[in-house]
Image (spheres, one colour):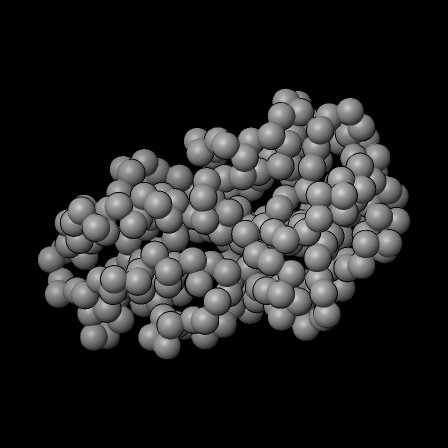
Length: 259
């Protein structure tokens, strides 16, 4: 997906701010509900009054936060609710809402996730290659298992099963997260050929890399079409149709930490 030329407000992310502010709550201007800010998307105004996504929350000045998915944003934009909410949030300041704002938000979230995966790869926290992922998953060294949207069912099933073994979750139905990104997008993000599956290294005593990746994954998945979190150990059910899942960290991580 190409990034619109005017979309970037700040430089590429280096490290997320994991301070007390990162855990504070903000109110969604469309839903009217408060949630941790790392589960929302900040909108900011450029110097010429253009409303743009600020997913790293680094742009100066006043911001407005949204926690709805793409479909809801498109509806709010078409029906004028977004403009009214933004006028209130920005105290009546002159602003221009681009018609392709929903596209820009998704592109920004995709870039944010790809940037994060690239950083974790350079830090040695990304595991690629089905054989290597399976081996490390079975030994309990994979904290998060991710699949490309065009990965095969057989490939996902094999690695999911290895991950359940390594996390003592056999029989639970726990599965890795299928991303709204295909293998081409993942390959470009990681600078490798044919990236279909990937794991984020970690264990219950060190989930820092997992937390960073899950924060980016959760926001993109939630925005792209609801929080399609993988099955958890407790329920053993597919939550792909649920849209009322909490913001922030996936239940996958919470369940894994409990062990």
